[in-house]
Image 1 (cartoon, rainbow, N blue to C red):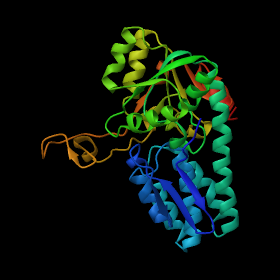
Image 2 (image 1 turned 60 degrees about the vertical axis):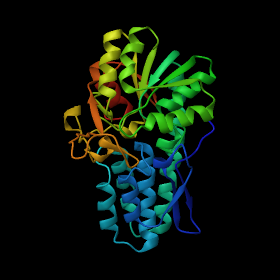
Image 3 (image 1 turned 90 degrees about the vertical axis):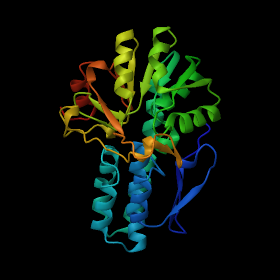
Image 4 (image 1 turned 90 degrees about the horizontal axis):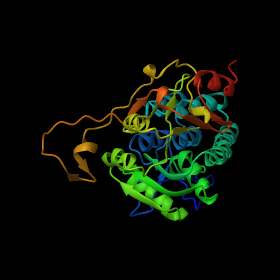
Length: 330
């Protein structure tokens, strides 16, 4: 994939540059981040988003805390509070904790986390490409912009296209923040993959017409039984795919599995500002004063999953056993 990465680190300047994903695809603008406080705000405001990319950004946020002389306990707390659903955020910060007070060690670990993301997603893309075919539907954004690597679900789609297995992609616009319309479409266009944008509510009709051969989505947090949280709208796609007999896959690094959770019931669901529903980029859609509900994620039960694409291969039911083996918990 002709990758546009979501960030870069200028060590000599002490600045972590974030590609402002709120302004894509119209503008490619990089925002300078110099402190952990600024990084936490950037994550919260979705300047950077996507579970793996948030994890890498948080790790470098702790590097910036060292450079800026911030209180490390406070920096860690702010970063942990920025987005509650993506477990990669917490894994990255847990890995950074042993290096508090050690700038060189902190920087080395942050770079290691980033490198592991790239290696892991290259493997996910290879494994996923072997099971996808025909016309594939995806939701939200799971490419390099969301990860800092090669992408999870979208990485597998692009690799499958290069192998001649996938011929066309249906891209859910992903209301209300339009990550599919703004970001996935942008990345597929750069990769030269044939794709068509649809509204979220069109997916069921396409499935009924036989125009979808498989669905693959990303994951923000998965429980040990295979239940998982992803961008809101994923659950509806899973139910529709199940009804129409269409394979439904989730693609994720094993770092997105939360071994503390036996099921999806314990996954915290972030609720974002209703303003993201009633307005877009300052343009009002709904009447003034009209209420809106905005859970950013939903939870899909594992019974709707055909398979789970990981860096260690594709897991099939029973998922609890496969995930425990893959995580080395047995």
